[in-house]
Length: 383
Figure (cartoon, rainbow, N blue to C red):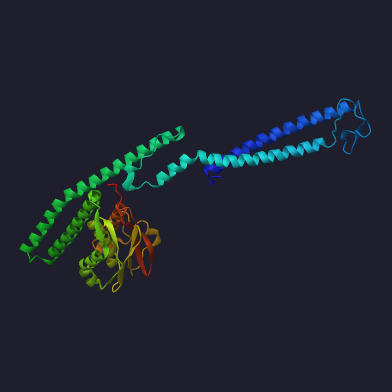
């Protein structure tokens, strides 16, 4: 029963209620009808010829006695036919009521389906635009009002979170820059320090650079929604530029880069560049030495598809939905080795979502991984 839809539950309960009512009414009608038939048969015994059939049923035979000026009544077999007809009528009424209840309840539940459809469209980037009309039937008015208030609270909470992240990253950027400058200055003024001090300074410089990259990424993520998305972007030249920027890392790991296809879309040139750069950089970093990375662009009528494939060791299926969460890393030791903070793919997801697209792991095995990004060619007019 728990797996049935609300419409089927209403239908079954209504049919059950009508069925019980019809059965009770049928029994009462049969009892009343049989009683009056017996009364008629008893009254006939005094005025005409009454024949007792098998089973003790009394009937009046008009063949043996001529009818008088009043009325000739035949009772033979009427009780059985009366009961059978009543049960047929009961079954027909139950079937008809079930069909009518199903369609009527479906129409009555239409506002609930509309509500569910609107809830499914709620995303992080459209909380402010997904308010539900509160001028509905009374049963849904309080639900709509509560849902709108929940959206407003969530929108305020996410806005406060983004503001806090941006402010924190902004405040951290200055002291980190100063620390990095002081470390560089100390290293240049004291080139002949003992090995243990040199190792300590290198560790400090490495962690400072890591924190600097982290604050830069956090600032970018907090300011994404202020970036204009009205530039015309051609992807093939952008991908070639990304390959050039990644050349030192590619040569170090012996990776082969390949590009295929082209596409044109409207959006933020800087953000789309960062999206493809992050995916390609991840594919290079977590690839096998001597492997390959392929970036394929497929242009369609109203959207384009970007696939970034590598020949790495793959992503376990249980992690494929989690890799786009902030600070999530499948292999933390390898992420620390390459200086990752777990925000690269999270930024990719944010950029794709901001452009009205989506990103997912299309395929992954021990032979490699393919991450796909779907983006609309034209941006919505909404800010």
